Each structure stands twice: as C-alpha cells, then as structure tokens.
Length: 322
Ligand SMILES: NC(=O)c1ccc[n+]([C@@H]2O[C@H](COP(=O)([O-])OP(=O)(O)OC[C@H]3O[C@@H](n4cnc5c(N)ncnc54)[C@H](O)[C@@H]3O)[C@@H](O)[C@H]2O)c1
Image (cartoon, rainbow, N blue to C red):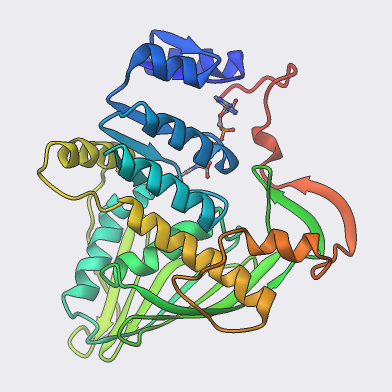
C-alpha cells in the first residue's frame, strides 16, 4: 500500500494511521512505481478529473473517486471516457448508500410500503456540491436509480463563497421530475432541519436519517420505527468494489450514478442561469455557476472571498492533527 500527498506532514499522518509503508509527494510517481490494483482519489474536487484520468491511464482494476465526481459535467464525462477506454471500473464515493438505514428506507419505498412514490424532498444546510450531493444521490437511490427528466431551480450568491476551493452558492432551491412522474424538491442553506430524502407515496411516507428509519401508512396507525443495524459504509463500499472486480455484483456507486448527480446539480445551476426548465442529460458541459459569476449575471454584493472548508487547509506550517 502507498499514498501520495503534496503536504508531507499530512501524508505522514495518513500513512501512520493506516499502516502505509510508502508516501510519495508526486501521485504520478506513485502510480508508476506502485502499479496499484485499486486507486482511491480523495483530494478536493478540482483535482478529481486530472487524477482519475491519470490513474485510469495506468490501468488499475478499479478507481474509487470521492464525491462530487468533478466540478462540471464536462470533467465528469472526460473521467468516464478515460475509464471506459482503459477498461477501468469506476465508482464514486457515495458511501452512504451502504448505511443500513438508507438500505432499509430504499427497501420500504421499492417494496411498496408507501404505495406509489409521488414526491421526494431533500433539504440540507451545506452547499450543492458538498453534502447536498449525497442528498441528490439519495433521492435517486431511494427511487431505484430512476433517470431524471428535468430540473428547475433558483440560485442566490451575494457573498464570494467557496467550498474546498470550488466556487459555491449562498443557497439554492428547486424542483426535479423523475422518470415516471415522481416529483422532487430540494433546498440547501435555507433550512434548520436536514433531510436526505423524505419520500411521500400514494399510501404513506418514509422518513430516515443515517441511524434510523420510520414509515407510516394505513396499517401502521402512525409512525412505525424500524430497527437498523450498524455497519461501516466506507468498508462496505470498498468490499463491493472488490466484489465488482471479481464479477459478483455491479457496484451501486458505479460512475453512471455519480454522473446523474452531476447532471442534477449542474442542471440546477443551468436552470438559474437560463431561467428555464433544463432537460437532462443536458448539453452544457462547463459549470454554469462560474459562467453566471464571470459574466456578471450573478454579482457579489458583500465582497471578500471565503471558504467554508478553510479549516482543512494545510501546508506552510498550518499543522493539522488529523
Ligand atoms: N464521501 C464522503 O462522505 C466525503 C466526506 C468528506 C470528504 N469527501 C470528499 O473527499 C475529497 C477530499 O476532502 P477532504 O475533506 O478529505 O480534504 P482534505 O483537505 O482533508 O484532504 C485532501 C488531501 O489532498 C492533499 N492534496 C492536495 N493536492 C494534492 C496533490 N496534487 N497530490 C496529492 N495530494 C494532494 C492535501 O494535502 C490533503 O491532505 C473532497 O472531494 C470531498 O468532497 C467525501
């Protein structure tokens, strides 16, 4: 096992924690020397495309790239092409799909506990590409990975806000329509209460978080709690990658699902940019939020760049005891 980090201090800490023998400063050198079977790309999102494409060129058996897959659908597309051409399996790190509560909620929805799914709602206090990317992924996961037909959204960005060096919005809200007619809605940075995906059907509702699930319908006479076990979702995600390589299953986080999440998020920005319903998959491949800011369509009214993840910064003696 080996790891690469441009910050020597962080690289050493990571290696010590996970019993890793060799630490590199240059990830390309690591790929060339180690010839790995599995690669985990876990840098900030602007590096996901460059690193995943470089890793794919060395033909490992599989790559696990962290969420969000990239910062634009164009980058995500380039990643998929590189992996397909090199015959490399690619999964995106939406490990929450392995949490027993998420799995149970999905079973309830797909098993008919709420009748025919009609509406799904996601609310989150952090930006679209951050935790809300799990929420967008979750909406599709609960509905059996349905395609998304369109997105219609509004975006506010009056402060110069970034997340892990990626330009982000102050808040966003909107609607989606899934294949078959299920309606979705989402809000980020607008609510106190976080919901990954509250599902309402013709006969009831499913509500859950990472550690619990409850549902109601005509038989339950109010909310019925369902017991769920515990499991390390990161380990389960990695195990499924091995099972996928060995042909036992298809990975639930395969890149096609990560791409749908990119389409939904970038589609929301594009809808705000064009003031229209955006049909998915869309043709715009750059990040529409950047277009809006750079063209002056979305003006910063309270200047001063800041990053909501500035506490992660290292290097230049900013020591992190991670
Ligand atoms: N799946 C999840 O639930 C989850 C949770 C947290 C973070 N993430 C994702 O993981 C990614 C990393 O986030 P984080 O919070 O772990 O960041 P982090 O800052 O803790 O770690 C990133 C590391 O990358 C290193 N790095 C930067 N440039 C590099 C380069 N060129 N070569 C090698 N190493 C380099 C940094 O020094 C740092 O140690 C993000 O995309 C984030 O969205 C996913």
